[in-house]
Image (cartoon, rainbow, N blue to C red; front, side):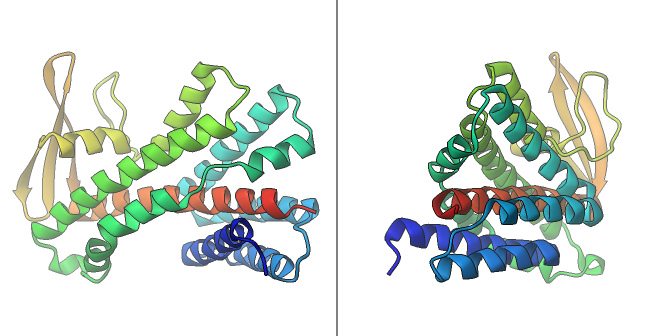
Length: 262
């Protein structure tokens, strides 16, 4: 039998594979499935297989979406910069992976808070939107963003060891920011946090059941930010989901490799 720590790492691989499959990253999921088989048969996960995972994920992420691609590139840059600046050997990389923080508590909070709402959103056709659906999407975005913030800060804080505080902060902000391509007043960001804050502070108003106005406070003055439709809110919700799930898959595979590297 494999000890409890090993079982956690096997679950990491299983969960990572399921996430990658759900994202449509089939080839990357197949590599993780091979890793699962190696661990189950008491073989180690080779460095070459870990490299194959990263290379395949990079290629598939680029084809999947900009959000998926940006997530991978940001996480890879944080890893390579931190490990490169600290001149870490592969053994030190393995040790860091072995002791990496667990992912489950972040995902459990997300699933526990949103499982019912997520099902309602996914099963509702856009043509049937009423005010209740944008409200569900806005609530869902707040919960997702909070989990994303907690996850990003923990992950960057751990893997960014060796970087100065400014670089660690920058890495966290990059993972928290998903550009939605909306023009906003100078000095403001058109990103997930901007809308999260507007929703959390009640800075929104329905124009009709399909369109919602948002605003924020900037230097003590009310500043309108772009109106969103129900479809825009759904897209923002999905982009945040892609960011979170891509981060989850990478974090889980790194942890598993640390425990079972050969």
